[in-house]
Image (tube, rainbow, N blue to C red; front, side):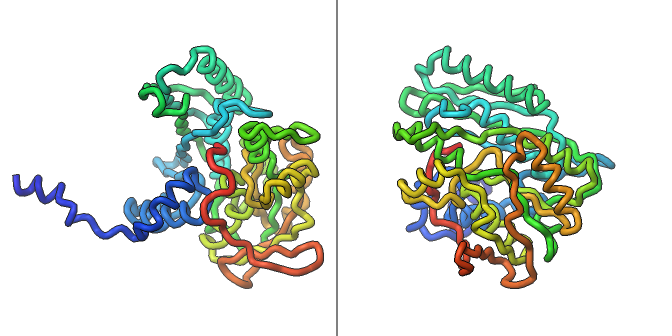
Amino acid sequence: MNDQLKKTDKSFIPACPIPISQYSKILVAHGGGGKLMHDLLEKIIIPTFNNPELEARHDGAIIELGKTRLAFTTDSYVVKPLFFPGSDIGALAVNGTVNDLAMCGARPLYLSAGFILEEGLSMDTLWRIVQSMQRAAEVAGVKLITGDTKVVDKGKGDDIFINTAGIGIIEHGLNIGPSSIKPGDVIIINGDIGRHGMAIMSAREGLNFESTIESDCAPLNGLVLKLIESGVEIHCLRDLTRGGLASALVEIAETSNTGIEIEENAIPVRNDVRGACEILGLDPIYVANEGRMAIFVKSTDAKNAFEIINSDPFGINASIIGTVTDKHAGMVTIKSSIGISRIVDMISGEQLPRIC
C-alpha cells in the first residue's frame, strides 16, 4: 500500500524544466516545427526517455538487429481541411511516414495506420481517404499491414486524425544523419519550397490567387534510393515539413555543431507562392513542404548528385543552396540578394497550424 502510494505521489516527479507560463504557448504551437516545440523535445521528451536512438535526433530511429539495420518511425496527421489542392490527409499520412524512413536512408517496407474517427464522420469521406492511402502506398512501394480504429464523441475529433508508423530496411553502409555532416558538404534541395503550406492556407481560408497552388506532397524514397545506388556519399537528409527549410537547417546545425551558409537567391520559390506569402506576411523559408528535402553530400559528389536529383520527377527545379562550414558552429546564416548575411532562427510557434 505504502509502496503504491509512493509510486503515484507527485512529489516523486522532478520539476518540469519548462516554465508553466510557456505551456499554453506550446499547446498553441501544436504540430511542431517552432522553437517552443523544439524546446519541448529537448527539455522534456529526450531527457526523460534518454537513449542513443533518441539522441540521434533524426526523422526515425535506426535499430540494429544482428547484421540487419532497420529504420522505425511514427507520425500523426491532423491537417485541416482534410482535402486540399494537390493532396489529402490520406496521401499525406502515407507519404509523410515514407519520407521519414527515406531520410534515414532506408527502403520503406511496411506501415501501420491508426484512425481516430469523430462520431458522425461520413462513410464516403472515410472511403475517399482510405482509397487515397492505398494509391499513395502503391506509388511509394509500401504495404499497410496493420492498424487500429477508435471513435470519439461528436465535437471531440474534428472528423478524423490518422497516425502512421513505418519500418524500413537499410541496405548500405552509409551513416546518414546530422552526426555525419562535415565542413565543405554541399546542400541541395530537390525543388521549390512553400507550396504545401500555401495550398493548405488557400483552401482553409478560401483565398483565391491567380493560379491554384497545389501541395507538393510526394514520396521521396525512390529518389533517395537512386542517389544511394549511384554511389553518392550522402551525409544527411532532412524533409522540410513543419517549420520549413529554415527550422530543418537550424536543427541540423545545432545537432551537428557545424555552421550552415545558404544563398537566398539560390532557394527556388514559385512566383505565386512568393506572392501569397507576401500577402499573408509569411517567409517562404519557414513554410511547410511535404515533398521537399535537404540533401547534404560530399563536395566531390555534388555535381553528380544534382544531376541525378534534377532528372527525377520529384527533383525538378532542384538547387544547390549552400554549404557546411566550420565557422559559427550551430548557426545558420543566409546571404541576401544584395550580399548581406543574417542569422536564421527558429520561429516561436508555427506560422501555419494544422498543416499536416
